Image 1 (cartoon, helix red, strand yellow):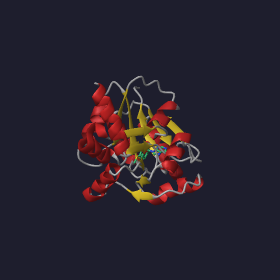
Image 2 (cartoon, protein in one colour; image 1 turned 60 degrees about the vertical axis):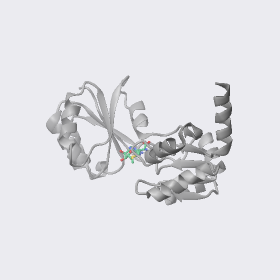
Image 3 (tube, helix red, strand yellow; image 1 turned 90 degrees about the vertical axis):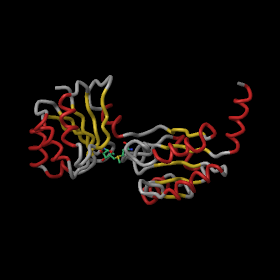
Image 4 (cartoon, protein in one colour; image 1 turned 90 degrees about the horizontal axis):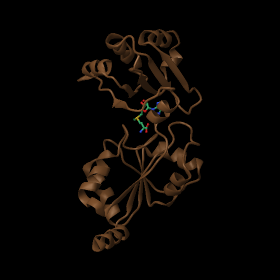
Length: 240
Ligand code: SAM
């Protein structure tokens, strides 16, 4: 037991750490003091899009090196990141908005790091904004347990998922893009016309808005006022 503990400390000195850092989902003030310190102190910040993260770094006058890491990064890129950690460099992983790895890039890097370095590597979350939890927190929905679907597939399996939502005895929440919201509401209208839907839109931003109604009412609202269709959306399907 004792030797294992010593071993772990040894590795901690040898390898760098990966911090999984949550960043704002809109309002740049939504960042923790710890996240800012980590972004300042690490050797590199791994960004989904370096231009987006640079806006945040500039706001807080953080002058640090950035490196891109996204869904289409090559295996070579990933290996070079793992090699940096092996060489003792500390890295912060951020996505464009919210918590990395939650419907965002990073999961592969984290799982491959664990595969390759096991418990020799420290991977530490720096908690902060997340669109799903923000939406639920101000929705007025009591959700002791809920189902989160991430993004619903565009084609294959789409209809099956809507059938499952209709039959679910839990609140269901998912992420949706502005381009597909009407199509999604139409599917909800087909499969569960009597369930109440909340659209949590543009959270923390200037045009933050919670719209609530049956799928058919929301289709009408969004069709009447095209500006409502725009922006980022979390969809919550209530039980009735
Ligand atoms: N990792 C992020 C998180 O922690 O919430 C989610 C990233 S995912 C690629 C982007 C989706 O999250 C958007 O399509 C939208 O459904 C949702 N989203 C992100 N920011 C949002 C916001 N400010 N308001 C509402 N939904 C948002």
